[in-house]
Image 1 (cartoon, rainbow, N blue to C red):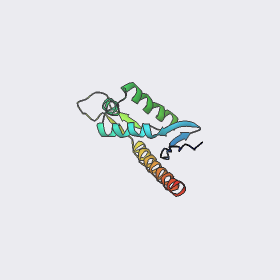
Image 2 (cartoon, rainbow, N blue to C red; image 1 turned 180 degrees about the horizontal axis):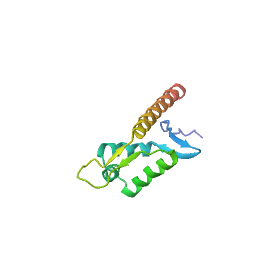
Image 3 (cartoon, rainbow, N blue to C red; image 1 turned 90 degrees about the vertical axis):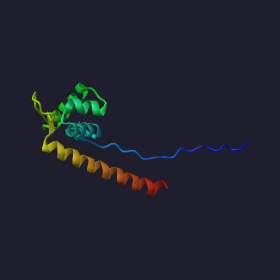
Image 4 (cartoon, rainbow, N blue to C red; image 1 turned 135 degrees about the vertical axis):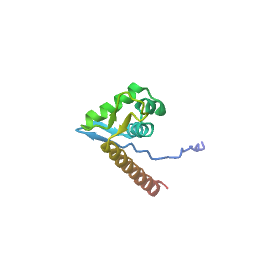
Length: 119
């Protein structure tokens, strides 16, 4: 009986990076996208619409990250005519920047190792 030729799917490496505080999830790609949207929009409500999530979900993710990290990430102002009612703290800006740099480097290393070992 002849052997059947097996179809092999192309493999691709995947890596998920996140930060924990005392074993609890504190920060990852999703919250970094939310914070970047807040920075661009100047509004949590608009940021939620921009990332396709509800205001309640986005607000909850921000507050949970702040609670776990023990740091304020977003400053909000109530009322006024100014469109810029929400802004990232300097801590949040650094956290997003540093997290994305680490994530990018991790993806690069994984892709290099994958190419070395699987090609």
